[in-house]
Length: 374
Image (cartoon, rainbow, N blue to C red; front, side, top):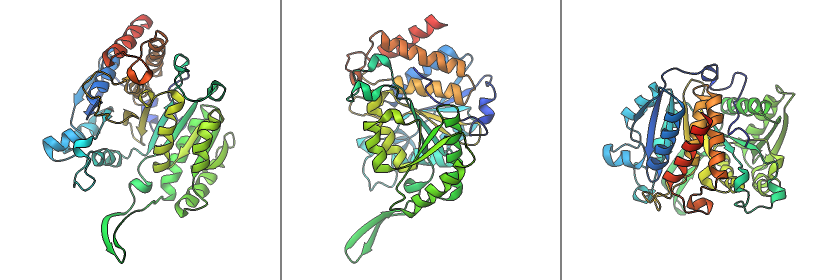
């Protein structure tokens, strides 16, 4: 399979880390809720198998943190994350904490973590494994050649704009959220996308809704201007509704997809059908410093928590991205990615992949493949 992420290259986020490996790294482990502890446990085993010495420190986040401390992101957790070399996160949330009117919700912890650590660029690769070609609902001729990376802006847009949960109006109660972007916010994530494209196939597809939204017209103008600094990279602008369609009808045409917070969130979940399961997708949230947050794209899946059915591959591949981007160990990242591919080739499958294998069985198969390559 192709590398499970693209280094941004140039003077992109993580340059300090990409310049060389860190000795005796500390990884902040935030298991979170639902299946989070199960999949991060598997990823931890893989990291420990390829990286010695490595220190893990565990802390609370999300719903469990609310139950125990009243905060979705306790100060102790934020402090640990600030001093760590990298952060490995499971997932947050669940029905227990799903009341939208609750003053504290699990997702608030994750959003605050991104904001406090200034992690503004989210890399979401879509790994395709030949052994899982029969799982995608798309025809094989559409899937052939697919190798894409979604670069999602992470600390602006609708999720961080001004909002009002409830106010009185002539028509009764109303609420609003505001999509806001500054030129600076767009510039910095655009540089990440263009430099990533330079290391890949040289194309950026910038997603917006410039025909309707003022914030997206600023987005398009800014991306166009930044693109002029990268004459070796092809730039196209795609309306978000057209992009959603093209991801299904011609996915191989995309290389790097650049999108705002909301659109990137939705499109990356849609792209999971290309891989065959949301449980396969990793991600990296990066900033300008030497710290990154790594997590699988899937949610907390509380309905299967504790059943041993969770797919740990998304978390394991997130650990590979951690090795590559935060610790500068591309060699170890490739070992992990290749071990995942070999485990799947041998037929190990969790229920989301159409099999009956357990979380433990899948992680054990990856560890066995790692032993063979070591």
